Length: 222
Length: 222
DNA sequence: GCTGTCAGATTGTCTGACAATCTTACAGGA
DNA sequence: TCCTGTAAGATTGTCAGACAATCTGACAGC
Picture 1 (cartoon, rainbow over the protein chains, first blue to last red):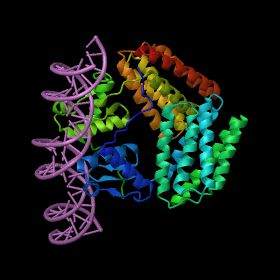
Picture 2 (cartoon, rainbow over the protein chains, first blue to last red):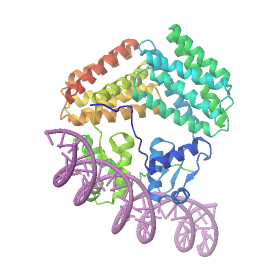
Picture 3 (cartoon, each protein chain N blue to C red):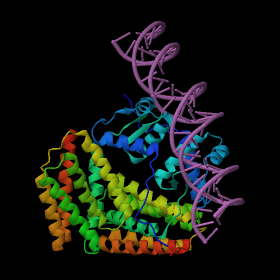
Picture 4 (cartoon, chains in turn cyan, orange, green, red):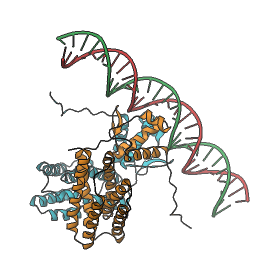
């Protein structure tokens, strides 16, 4: 019996497509935070029925990308300074756990870190689009959590990254020197390769705190 | 201007009530894992319309309590051995982060740990119901994560606890000596009070591994 | 300045319907 | 015997239209 494990057909329901389209619009900055997502207007624009839109909105709300207030509708979540700080605090726990397990991680997991770092650096050198760089940046941090080998922790980190993308979409372009960032990441990986995990952890903490403050400042929050 | 901060009216939509009822049924073991949740049957039983049921199911799916397969319907998630291991691994990261921050935590957060431990011990002595003990047990572990002061980490831990409750609901009653558990928890807190955080962390790791194996065995998985 | 009331807008929920898809069972051909 | 093709029933995915409950904002009245 031959197995076709490599094949898989992805089914896409209308609800999924609507949710994906809304996500894209949010991340591309087409929809500002706080924007109300009216069901009838969306249904008309997308050419689908209201219940379908409703279901897609329920999905977005569950993801935290939007907020539902009873009888007041769904609107795009507005990032708060406290949220950004909390996300960064949580990231430190997750990514820090990955860093501390560098030695126990499988070679593939360690390689994933190297690969994602390379991809990011390559993007910086190639002057890739802001969004591409952002994506690769977050992928790098995701690969750090991947060192734990825990799908759930990776999923949690992905959720946190989503929140950050939402926040970053609110600012046209964050004042961040991509070259410095790339060097910072490279230095982190170097510490890992050297086996100095505690130093790597401390470095990561500083890196995250810096990012946190930059984002808060860029958002114009306190 | 007087403020009425202590007052708040909770609005409960039909969808929320249905979701809550389904959760209760799952945790109480009335619905076995793998049970298909037919929309029409639920709508008829609950006396609501199918779209309303559908929305509630979407919520459960987002919570991970149920799984939706396209055109095949929603069914209650079946716990896998790998999931249980992963949940315990993730718990170690989250609870371990709390334990390591015992000193940096606020007095209130440390007190929350003591209070939840007391509640659990009191429940054991009072021979409280299995479900009450289970709830207080998980609350204790939640309070450990609370030491980090991060709402998101606490929410993640709560999600993990939900998954565990789902798994535990599948076994009538796990073979676990509540008295031993209570002593184990008390010993953990004692290590914290003594300030030996590394020992506490190691103790926690062993505690979680034990729990993991017990659950897997009780579920009859490998 | 505060309260009561009304119209419009929006959501929450229902009813009914139909197409797409899955499951199952059964008949036919190698 | 085993595989393939087909048909019937069940279930989901999506739609249209409708109505009550609720929120918002404006306006009148005290």
